[in-house]
Length: 186
Image (cartoon, rainbow, N blue to C red; front, side, top):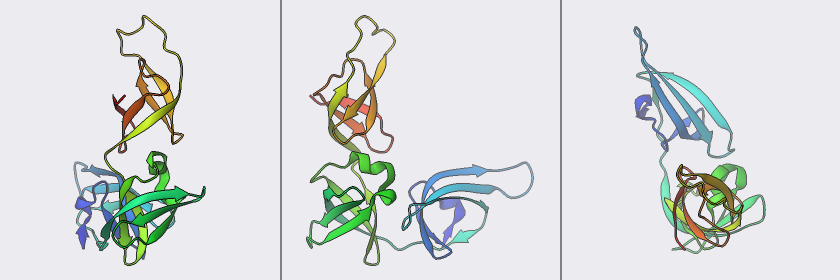
């Protein structure tokens, strides 16, 4: 059992027979009475989001998860396929389960698969990923003193805010946790 005070971002727990992964956590302590813990969690089987409020001192069952090194292979639009690098077994995961992290996946990218029993539930991405810029607006010269940014599209289709000097064809490093630009690689 996990105390609800320990339900930080990324923790997986069971509730009413379903598995949830915490996306957001907030702790509220009023002047009197017990503290309340508000969480926003994603159901790992359906992809649905749940907002729940607990009272301090409540407990929820902990989910026993296993992690395997895997490699992203391809997707067919709705299902993403991953291969376990030790057993070479392939595991499908639906796009709605992956959510925004699907936009950072490149073919042959190493990832960690989260398993509950024999069921692949979630994917843990590397902290950063290098992506090629496929579309960038032309920068306006002279406006560099204020740290101007622009939006570019990368090879996987997502859009990223970058500094004005990034051009089409550049390879940039993006933080997969926040979706922010880190640096230009080439």
